[in-house]
Image: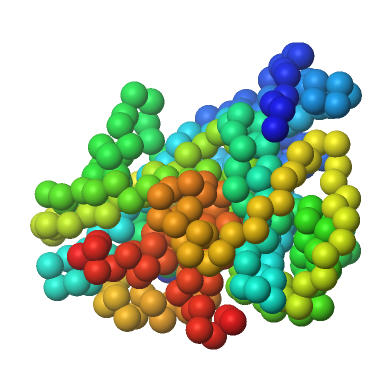
Length: 178
Length: 178
């Protein structure tokens, strides 16, 4: 399969969260097209499991869809930060839990138009602490048994892509993950 | 949990694929913030299964990450189109297969900053035909056994979020899905 050739790139939009580039591309068939490529920060999502085999989830208000979403803790990777440090930081900020064990659980591309990567982790050996949320984060902690989480998935109650991927993977590889 | 109040909204960027709005928001704690909300087209992804229990997947070149991605057929829902019609159309355009049976397989939000929905379907009773790809789509059809697809998932070879979600869900609910 032949790759595309970039002829030109122009920045079309830039903000704190996102840059949009209008790339001029030469396709393998020699025709010239314009392609909007989006730059977004990578993020981490972490599936925390307590000693009692409860999954630590959060209910968070998602403004664009005006909806209270059941998710695992997630957040953007800061400049220069390692994904695993991001996962530990977000876990503590959003839930108060500190993890003594963090295992990589794969990564994926959430959007084909962007280079953004989503890094997944499983957090174990947890100790409870205090949440440090930002004013835009209204977060309620929810401890779910594995069967409760499976039920939420199966009844379509979970809509957050990284949460669905991490939970389904956990259910598929459970014997090894625990 | 209290919802946010929109004080003002301004369009910051608009293109064929995406609109960005800068919303001024009053938070429940009365502070005023700015929030970038993104409008994107909904899309469909469809998991096609042949009579011989092969999963019809595609290899497609993803320019932003310069990578040949193993995915199930997907595409944007056109203005006025129903998600299931989109799924049947994209299946036929990208693989040539027509489906006589299409079952909803749930939906999710691929990005918390956007109202975009991703609709999943399972396609069965397939008949082969001819691909109708666009010049930007270099697509190679790949028929995978269920065990081959499971192996691709487990070894991290699949990076496309809707494909991961649909395949994992299929593996978890397999007895019912077949």
